Length: 84
Image (cartoon, rainbow, N blue to C red):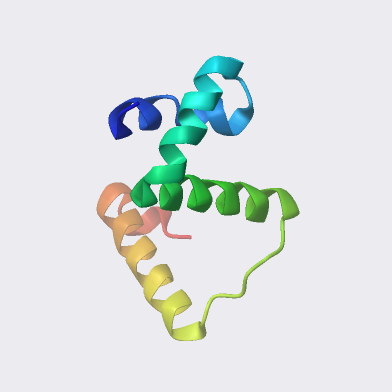
């Protein structure tokens, strides 16, 4: 299995919707491919964090920059009369 094939089937693999024979090939590829291991591990961690639903407090400076950027985008798209 090549990395491209693995990435094409990644959602099905993570969801457990992959045929057992293909799953074995998938696992074999992961055992020898660190970049694919990193991708799969990151996806699993992201899913776990999402399912746990734990809020994460953004650092104040980052939150302010994010809000400023979103306001600018909103104004550019909707004009200042629709500002939130």
